[in-house]
Image (tube, rainbow, N blue to C red; front, top):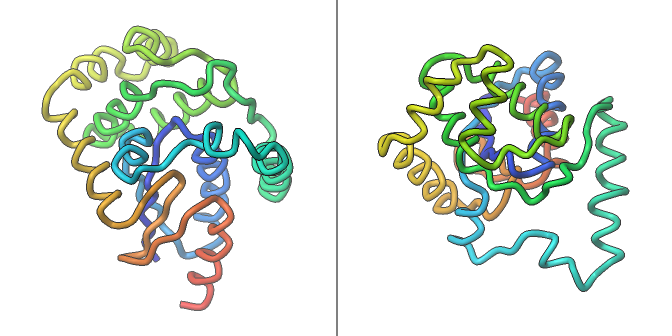
Length: 200
């Protein structure tokens, strides 16, 4: 079963899903296709608001989403290194353009691990091309190529296209998954995707 994963580094839930997906792909007949999108763009196109804004007046729900639900998910999937980024919310436009470059040149999985670890395990401030270049240089991961290509119109347009198409299909946030045209939103829907794959 093929699943499109509407993805942006900006979402801590995208990090959690990625860690869970690594195990799911080994135990179930599912292949996740990461589609780099800009979370802020999706929210703007769909008139959505981030939880920090929409839940600001509902402290019990905020606490449930960012403590109880997080901790349950991490325990279920044995995720041990997650740390909320102290610079959150992070501008990830350079990072997600870099993901498009990495996909095009065949080092996406390595790039993904480096950037997700930097944001959601090491709490790095990765909101500029310079910070991304420094991180990639440290890990010997095509730093010059990425920085050169994220500035190209071709890369920028591909990100705009991915983001617009995700919103048109129904996405309003991240993590969102599509099995063909059927949409699943939120990290807990990974359970439903596993059930679908098992019954296929």
